[in-house]
Length: 129
Image (cartoon, rainbow, N blue to C red; front, side, top):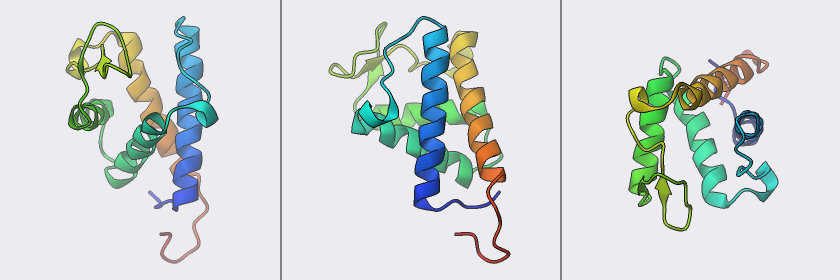
């Protein structure tokens, strides 16, 4: 898997975020803001997710979710029945196997986007970092 530079990571993160936002909207969740309006913590979280998959290309959706949960918990988030950024609660802070299939799908989709876009990057023949 090529190692994308920072602007490319941002582009992949933006794409993954917008696909996730569309998927959420299809499920009736219109709470996701467009990338340019999303809070910094949310954009940073998506970028970290991209970097995680670039650094761990064999990681599966379960690993992606576990990484996301570690990040959230280290930032002070806890399980809550309702997602509330001010209270730092999120209903998806549970083990992957306890997520609804519609929520698990987000991790599958995210991983697929990162891998496809990263694998589609042109190679320069040298160090791609």
